[in-house]
Structures are given as structure tokens and as C-alpha cells.
Length: 296
Image (cartoon, one colour):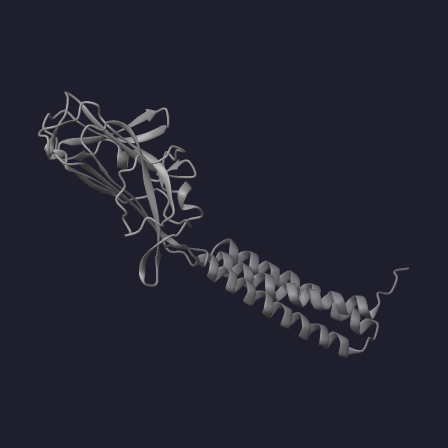
């Protein structure tokens, strides 16, 4: 003989059935949309939930239980379902709230018109990397023509770097901007690991111009390299000024707005200095009043 279920058990099952029958279909429609598998799963859940609730109510009548607890279970189940659907809706809106972040890399090298090069002249600058991965596709960086220069990659003892190469003896200035990152949606976690690479431990060479008007700014050390064949045309040729900008961040990912940074290398390298040169990368953050240096 089947044991008679208690009123408490039936009441709990009824409340749970109401909660699931209402919350699950609504959540499926919010997440998966009103067409395709989402709508089918929602309809099936409603059907099964309705059958289950009818069976529970039939047991209520069969055992002549008081209807008050059943009514309370329905109210609680409806309220719980409403809260659950609101939670899914809020989470869904936040998850869908995305806006692409900015990532641009600008390279300028000026003063080169006062210098000559060898048969082949290379100038190496750091690559923009995030957690060791390329920000831009190789196709976006390699093989680009920048005046008399072309771009390629070089594997160095310190890591991979971007090369500007020319076969012209009389050198010309470089100016180019890269701005189509492979990944569109991201947040900046640690800008020192998401901008210039390589990062080295050597002390900077001491040719820094302070990009943000102060030396009291967070910085780290990266590398540039000037070809040994670069020679000044005259005794008063002046420095080769390397100015690199990375502007990164500022997007929204799942409802979270990311910080936006500007990292600059700004170095005036005097005549006669060639090879690898350790240089400062200076860090600033975009704030309400513009670009603000990040203090040490």
C-alpha cells in the first residue's frame, strides 16, 4: 500500500513546481531568445511543469488537505520566480553590455634627415604585447611601407621586436600608426605587461624627455636599437628623437568599464649612440580632467 504523502511535502513540491515552471522558461527566453531551441525548451518546460502542478493539486483534493498552504506555496513560488527572472535579466543585460576597447600604437622617429645609413639600415622598436601575445596581427605590422622604410620582425636575445628597414643612404623620418587590434573586447589588468615588449631590468640610458611634464611618474624599461651604420652628416646633427605611444583600454566588458592608459617612450638619443638602448616607458591614465601621470 502506497504511503500517503504529507501536506508539508506536497506544499513544498507545489511551490518548487511553480517556481521552476515560471522561472526556467522565462530565463531560457531571455538567454536564448524567442526563436529556435530556446522557445522549444521553454514550451516543453511549461507543459511538464503544468502537468506536475495538476498532479500535486489532485493529491491535495484526494487527501482533503486544507487549500491555504497550497495557495501560499503558489504565491511564494511566483515571487521566487519573479526574483529569479529579474536576476537573470540584470545579469544578461550586464553580460551583453560590451564596448570595444582602444589599442593604438604610434611610432615616430625624427631627426633622421641629419643622418646617413649603410647599405641596409635597421631601427628596432618594441612590440605591443598583452600577456606575451601579439596585439595586432602579423599581417597588420609586417611588410608595411612607411616612406622609404618597410616593416618586419626581428628575433633578438631580449625578444621579438618591430624593425623599420631601409636601403636608402640618406635617411628620412618615420611616422606610422597601427590601430586594428585582433581582440576587440578586453580590460587592462597590468599595463606594464600589456604594452611595450620586451621589458628589461637594465637602467635607462638617460636620454629621456618627460612626456607628461614630470619625472615623478610610473615607468618601466624597454629597448630600442639603432643600426651601427647610422652616422651624423654634420657635427651639429642633433639627436635622433624616438617617440612611441601606446593608447590602450577604455572599453566595457560585461558591464565593467576598463581603465584607459597612455604609455610613452620619448627619448632624444645623441649622435654616436647605436646598438641597443634601454629607454623609459612612462605610464599615464585617462581621468576626468584628461591624461594624468600614474605616480610611482
